[in-house]
Image (tube, rainbow, N blue to C red):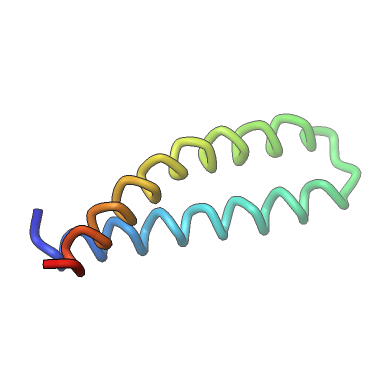
Length: 66
């Protein structure tokens, strides 16, 4: 994989985790009817982005050592 593509994927995964964390915090403080659904959806999407972030971080470290 090219280093540019790795950096884009890494940035997108990091951004996704950050956005999900913000939304989880906001919906956690509100008292809406669908609070539980929103928190679960953003939690699952955060869990999906986490292995992508880990994989691309390993690739970035390997490319840096070359």
